[in-house]
Amino acid sequence: MDFQDIDLAALPKRVGKRRDRHGRGPRGPIVPPALPGARSKAAVFDRCVERAIARLERSWPDEMGRIDVTVEDVPLSDPATWEHGLVPLGRCFPGRGQSLGRIVLYRRPMEERAYDSQDLGIGVLDALVQQVAALLGRAPEEIDPGYGEY
Image: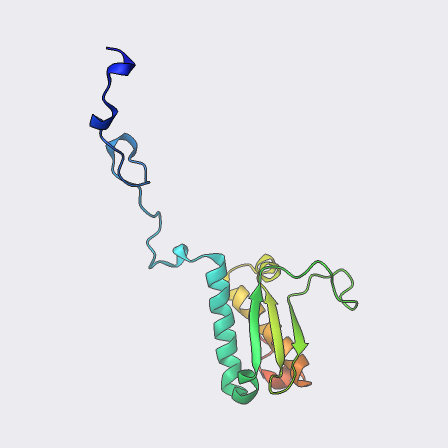
């Protein structure tokens, strides 16, 4: 039999993009989506930010409603003059008009400093409290009475 004699249309076609190695069936996810191990680092960080915002909104609902909080992976490469080579965890930018301003939290520097997800949550809350205090011109202890104690 020669290769020219094979009818390619008669060969079975591969269905789907997943491999079926050694006849064991298609591969599935290693961790089911409902378990915590399936969440990405970004999703865990976003959840920490949501919890920190909710905590501050209970005490400062009007002010937190006028502050935009965003998340970026890393800070820009041009540090501010007062940062002296330190990697910032967050920055605040004063607002105009009705907006009090914008707070940017940096995910990767905070993840590098945290031991686990609980430590990450505390770090996110600390950074958010510091930035809100800077925007409102108040002490961090006034924004969150538990600041620095956890």
